[in-house]
Image (cartoon, rainbow, N blue to C red; front, side, top):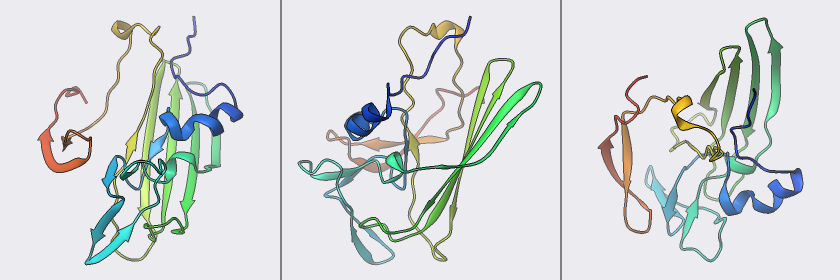
Length: 178
């Protein structure tokens, strides 16, 4: 029996109204956490980011979370269906003048496997800072004993009491079956 496992939005209106409140199911880039005082330095240049939550003293979760992705291809075969999406970031958001393209490939297989591959290509012609994250949210009704989540990670970044990244790399092997 098919079950719904992703906790998303009920409608386009729900998405528009709530996406920046809870970031359900979205990709987070070019920064995937909080940036203290919405300011960072890169290659001896200071940048000031726009803040999603104006009342906070930090920028959060980048610009990709509410951007449109174009469908590049859709294919269906006997054993799988594939969807490829692309976003071209033009460098116009405050504090992040670097251009990049994000390509996401989803492959749903008949064995109830969903694979998601994300490739981010720097198109700015110069070095750029970048981090990537994702807020996958799953329904509580899903039996975790019948579910497997795998991803490759070597470390996690430590955070302080305000959830601002400290830069400290902490070994991560919780999901070591990949």
